[in-house]
Length: 508
Image (cartoon, rainbow, N blue to C red; front, side, top):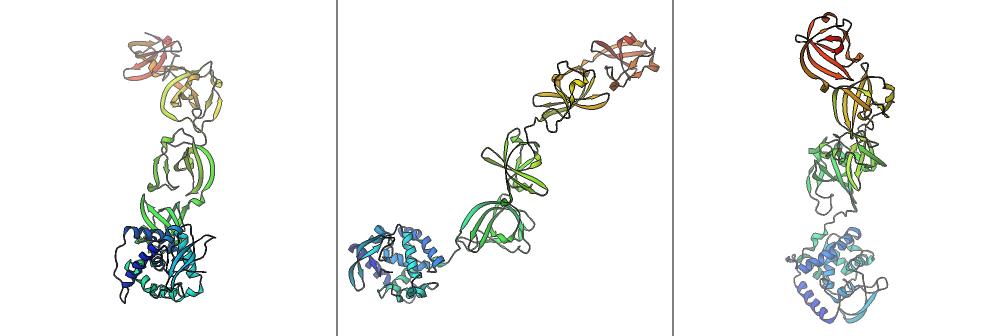
């Protein structure tokens, strides 16, 4: 493989380069060259070629500072004609994937003309230079060398350059611009992706270090240890892979903590355990909470699910934890979070929005077409019991009223036994306490066989009893009601309520 020994370029740039080289060389000596600050353009040049140079150190074991110094010296900070027009920073001769350019050059032995490689970018120029050094037996002593002076001398001794001051010039550049600070090898993050997982500190891992970035990557500083997080569920939101292993980014109570080695945690939930499903669900329990992760903890709590009532929710993930199945739900494209499966329904039910005890009686409407249900129709657990027509000849005691959807429903008894629910549209309510009107009068019971009822309804459920002792006694009447076309009076003996009696059974 051909190589370039000093600097290609047009005559003006060669002259400028020689001035720079002479000035740099003048600063060399036994002690370290004094440092100076980089100009904006110089820093920009280093920033652009640094990643490829660091890859060369990481993968090819050629010091980053050596590559940077050679690029600076041989391309005049990327300003040479060859580096500008052909992206060739090192003046390497020959062709690169069939591409080359013919240019004049000046060797230590005199001027000449040669073909130089043309690269797509400076990155490929750096990579080709690294390969030239690390894959050539002549420079083997430079590979893996951690002392930049020794590495440069090995390159010079291998015949890379004929300039007798080549090493001293490069050493001066490294020291002047503090380039050896880039010789610290950081691990490269090979992959980095978001994650949904939960874990606790593993046994004997309380002294595991928490880092600001995955260990031994750039900007990785020690934050603390895991000893303060024993026995607590930690959220894992990211994972990163380096050559040293797998790293987790942990959080608690919506606050970032840092990066730890994956083996420091005992995982209780990981998204890879999720089962893919395709379901549609509806809210059942309005008080149920939705969580960012399938764990009922305050740190994951996103509030109640009530605002999604009566909306079709898509389920794409399922997992069982702590004895409960969990669903991850979405509305459209928006992921809402995780909800316990038993808090959702398979279908859209009517919800009971009002329910109160009730005091009334009704007859089945002649136009009734519905059934008796265990709960208001289309509410959860509502099952058909019997046709409502089976109770055509019964007086239904209404004990509960509820509203489901836009319909009122009544729960009723027959002969004191609870039966089920019927809709308001299928019933004729003939008695409620509102039918009663106050009066003030007195009366005598004229029929010794007359019955007293606790409500003005003739039914076994109104507890009929004989008038007995009160036959022929002057009694007070404080209320009256007309029910199903029949008049009723409510009797009292002083302050004691006796019950309701049909008006035909008394004399006023």
